[in-house]
Image (cartoon, rainbow, N blue to C red; front, side, top):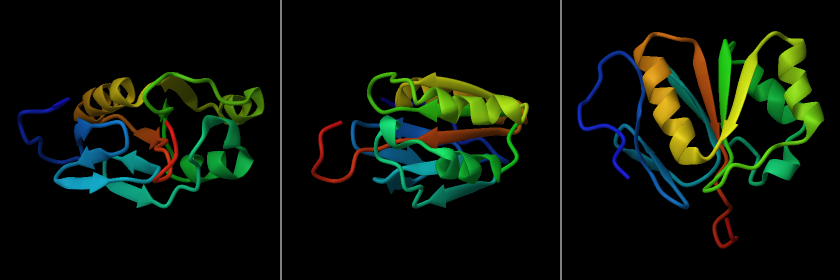
Length: 129
């Protein structure tokens, strides 16, 4: 699904979301990653929502977002309550959605200059999503 036909200036944006990859600008990423308007953090060591823990949350909060969009794959799946609570205790909003919805929302908020971070979970190569 194409998410952007124009090339916005000033922030990184999602161009395409697939079942096993996401294209940021012109680069296809095939492993879970974090996306902020000014950087991509590759190697986020999460490949399943159930694996989300405090360490995974700290990596996201280190980017100092005002809101986090958690893309959980092709379907919306909620993470453990303790993971969500870690954001709420720090005053950071978090929304859970499928990857396509997270990408669309991220692009919109980034275009508005918001401090948004999208955390995309992608399946490991060879595993079911």
